[in-house]
Length: 364
Image (tube, rainbow, N blue to C red; front, side):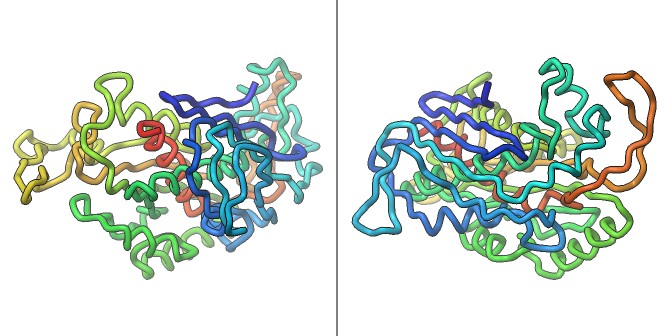
């Protein structure tokens, strides 16, 4: 069964394994006539693609999507238009080293879904490259999110993200009241997607140090949405936070999601936490934006600000205690293969994509 996400009229299904013939996606609900500019979509997907820098896995994949259905060519060869029917695409896997996993088919890699997958799928889960649990499956998510970003942008809604922190090194935060689309472009233009280049250089050095020590690092991605109309969402179970969280936690390695001030609210007084309202001409605004643009599960018209925490890459080369879950014996594992010493830089477009799918689902 594929991994399926649904909200209102938008449905997303992702299939495939890291070392299978390919991975793919079906996105259903994008309105007919939506313009899909292929160069922008490819550029967005390249930001996630492996092998671009020393801070990522050296697996080489082009990640070029083959669109099978749901879109027709426009007058310009660089453009497609959504038909209104399901958009299906496949991305071929071309650089797999399955032999790297031949010695660990029954060994539980600490921090991975090997053991739980073995239980869930009666011992038939594909462990090569993590199988269906792999971050490789974020490529079709980014494809779908890239289309949703274009759908939103055509309605004046922009989404962007940056690395907020890695290994104790912090970037400049988004201004929660005045974040601009220019901030999104600045981060997206850099291999280390940050606002402060000096902080980005320090992050690269920190990641390289962890790699040389056969270790890995986690971090936090901050993202924002601007231009989203006020009054969108629902209280309780269908709220903006609920829907966004449900898809963000579909990104492998995400272990925490917060909105606005997030866990910082736990240290504040109400007089500090509340955002005072005021009229700016004919617009309702707030002086601060601790709420992250969401009140009662519904958009307030202020920028939506979220953060996603990523755990360190579990595949590290150091010897680790584990078990053989078939023979039920203790053992020691040394993981071979190509792995990101830190997934956070490549996770930035994944967070943008997930956020775009969630936001689009409230508007289609």
